[in-house]
Image 1: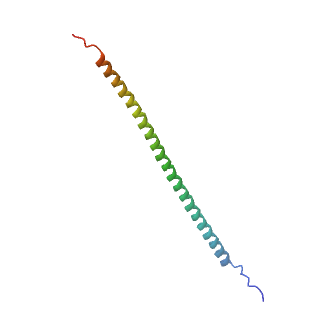
Image 2: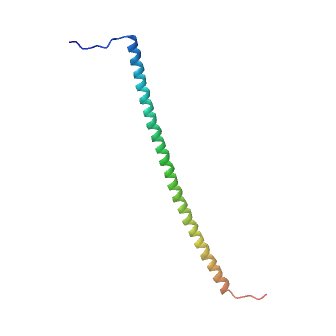
Image 3: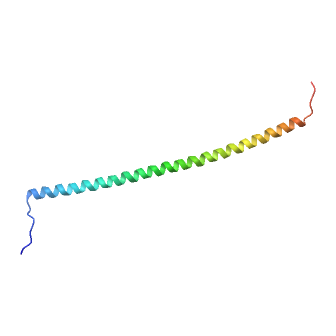
Length: 91
């Protein structure tokens, strides 16, 4: 018994081209989905990193403001003490 051989006809040729094109387009769409998903994850990661940096920067600014406020309070206390210890002058 002989093996069945597929005939080389013009319609089979067109059928092969259409099937190969369909497979190619399916692969392109799958890769585009992968790229889109990877890009979305990268943007989310970037935004999350920016939020963390903002929180760190805000905490640093708050600490610097607290330090300046403490220094200002110390100067006010010092001036108040100097004012109380200074002899009162009569006009």
